[in-house]
Length: 80
Image 1: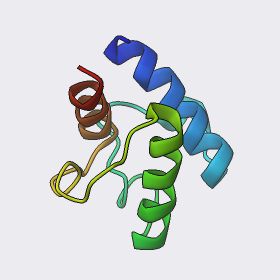
Image 2: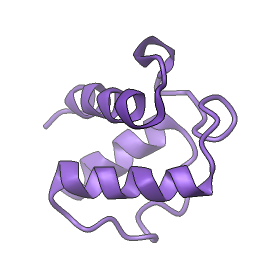
Image 3: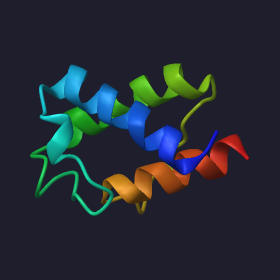
Image 4: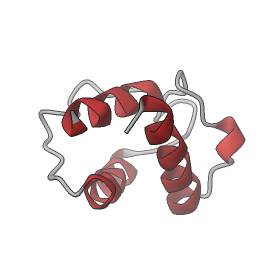
């Protein structure tokens, strides 16, 4: 799965779960500042990503995640 494929799926997850405009979701979008996610949303996102990847998402994998691009890179690394 390419990073572009992951971005497309992540846009779907973010727009469906958090009612965000998919066009407003870019690699440099900050999850908390730009997309207004909070810590509870981050937990929900982790659950959605586990369903998407079929793998457990550990806190360690996502401790430095701040942007959509960070999420894409972390998922890409998990799937590699």
